[in-house]
Length: 81
Image (cartoon, rainbow, N blue to C red; front, side, top):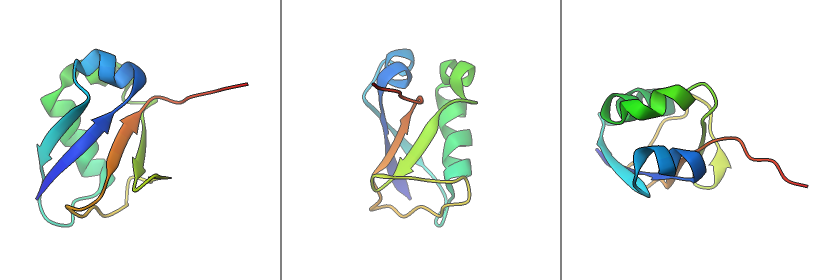
């Protein structure tokens, strides 16, 4: 399946793009998407331990199964006040 990953904040700056297209097997998980993204954009490896993932606007765990119609985002932790 073809999946577009939206990148935000430092992830966007490091990657140099707003989104990145991945080709993943059907029923791939967030963990598989993370591995594929880091293989394609190795500069993100410096942030891999802190990057958060969301699917359809909800935080997602590594075992979340993805579908081609999902909106997937990758971003560093945020704080506010």
